[in-house]
Image: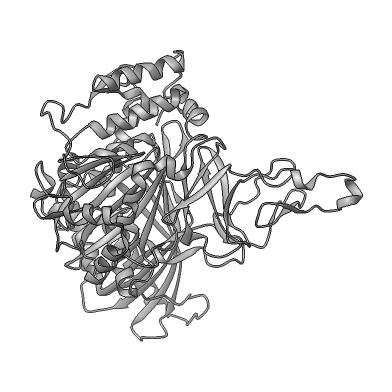
Length: 182
Length: 446
C-alpha cells in the first residue's frame, strides 16, 4: 500500500508552468467525472494507480490515527476501478439510474515535486463534492483532503494519476451511498 | 424526505392491524415510516431485546472502549482491568453531560468535561474534584455509571440488554446459537474486525434492511443484476434462481432466520482448504453434519446471509477479485436514529490467524461488494429508500404489500434436517419476513 508524503513537510518548489499544468490536469479530471465520461477518466489513470479512501473514526486527541490503514470505503487499483465503471455501463446499476449529478469542487492546491521521481508531483488539495439525483431537492455532500501523486506521461492529457488518497471529514457518511468517485 | 404525521390512531390498534395483515399474508407500508410506531419500538422493543454492541476484537485490551447505541441511548462499551467487557449509558451521573464524545479509544479513566467527575474502567466513580470540600457524604458507591443490565458474548460477538429480567443471551438466541460456529470457527483464534466499521445514514426504516437480509433471495437476480454482469459474484447466475444451489436452504432457529447455500463439498468459498480443515475440527458433530450433509444428495451447506432479531445481520459470500474467488464476511447493525432514518453499521471480519495476504484480499472483496461504495449494496439502498419515502403518502402508506411467496406451492420443511430449528428447501419464501414482523408485533404488544 503506498502512502503519499505530506507535501507541506517536504515542499520542493515547482516552477509556475509545471504547477499550472498539474492543476489543470486535476481540473480536467473533475470535468470528466462530473460529465460522466468514465472511459476517458480511466484513460488518465496510471496503470499502477492506487486509489484509497480510508474509513475514519473519532478518537480522543492524541490516541492514535482516526484513519484506518486497513479498512477503506475505496481501496482500488486500475482493474477494480474498471470493474466499477463497467458496472455503471451495464445500465442496470440501479443506484446510478438516473446517474448522480456530481460537482467536484477541487481547491486549495499546493503542488510540490515528488522527491522520488523527477517527472512526478505531489498535490494536496481540498475536495467538496455536491450530489443531486433526479428530483431530489436536498444536496448531499462529501468533503475531505486529497493527497494525489500526478506523473507526466506521453498521453494527450500529458499526465496520469498515480495515487489518490481522500481523507474524509465525516466518520458517519451522510450520503446514502458512495456510488460516485471522489 | 418527509416524515409522515401521526395518524391520531391509537398505536396499540395500529400494531393489531399489522398483526392481522401479517397473518393474512400482507404488510401495510405505514410501518416503514411512522413516528408513533418508532416511539413504541423505543419503549417496548429496544430496551428489552439483546442488541449487538461490538466484536471482542474491537476492545482487546483493558481500557479499550467503543461508543455504540441501544435504541436511541448512547452506550460506552469498555473492557475493564479485570478483562470483563461492560457497557454503560454514556452519561455522567452528576448532571447528565455526555461522558465520551469519541467513537473509539483507550483510556485509563472516563472523565466528564463539565465538573471533572471521573470513572474507572469498571464504571465506578473514583474522582470528584474538591471532594470533601464540597460534599460531606457523597454516596460514591451509588453514583457509578448506569450499567447496561446484561452484557454477554457468544462466539466473540458482544450483545447488551437493558432489561435485567430478560432471559440470558444464549436463551434469547435459542436454537440459532450453534450455527454461529459455521462462520466463527475457520480459525482457532476466531474472527477479528478489520479496522473500523463503515457507518452511513440512509433514509430508510431499520426494519427494511433487516428484512432484506432475513429472507429476500428473490431480489438478488434483478437488483444485483449489474454485479452478475461484471462477474463479481463467486457463483453462477443460474444458482441464484428458484431451484438453484445458492438459494437452496432457509433455516429458522431461535431468534434467527438465515439462508444457506447448497454447495458441493469442494466449493470452499475461496477459503484456503486448511481453514476448512480447521472448521471441521472445531465445530460440533451436529454442525459438521449440517456443513457436510445438510444440502442432501452429497451436498453440504454454507450460511450466506441472515438476521438475528431485531436488527443484526450477517453476510458471508464469495466474491471474485482479480479473477480469484475470495470470501467476504460482514456483520451489520441497522441502528434506528429517528422515524424513517437509519444509521447503517457494517463491519468487515476476517480470520484472526489468517495470512496477511488472505486478510487483505478478503478485505478488498468486502469493500468491492458491501458498504456504501459496495457494488452490491449500493443498489439495495436504492430499493430501501424508495419504500420509506413513498410511505409518506396517505394512500400509499395504507396500501398492503403482498408477502405470500411459497404459500401456494405448499413448500414443506426438510424432513431430516440435521441441525436445530426448521429448514426449508428453498429461499424463495416470504415466511421469514412474516415471522420477523410477527415477532415485532408481539414485542410491541406486550
